[in-house]
Image (cartoon, rainbow, N blue to C red; front, side, top):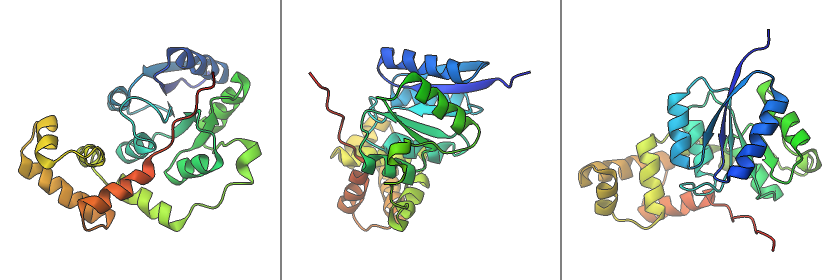
Length: 220
């Protein structure tokens, strides 16, 4: 009897979510698919389905800032592998996705057969990246690995605070948005600085900017 799998498909484009679901069903005979169209919906899906076998994650979803969604998910539930599915297909983007803990990277230009094969490989515990770029990827840099580890140590609330810092919000504005006291935000900021090994909000924002990825250009 085939093992039933549970896959979270996270993409804000309905047509591409449908394509990913088709690829998932092609790869796995008995599967439950959970859809998410925003980063907040992905967080809820992971909370509701901690037994999921895989997350297929678009980098450029509403609420995400580049690699922030990937790093957040790896920190919250490191037991669920995450495969990035993105239109940003540059080699340096793929390498950094792997630096930040992705179990694979599938370009959106891939065929359904290729996506299905990649899903099958990751479900079996392997890593998948496009064969044509595999030889061109540098080894994970020690600095990036340390940074990814530091980010993964942030709590979900601290990660939200860091994201808001990168948007230029003040402590009182963040406190209002998260409905907590300004003192609580100050404590979070202090913890963020300590975990990231920096000494100021500006340095924390500069560090977080490394998570950004330029959105893929849409032709036409």
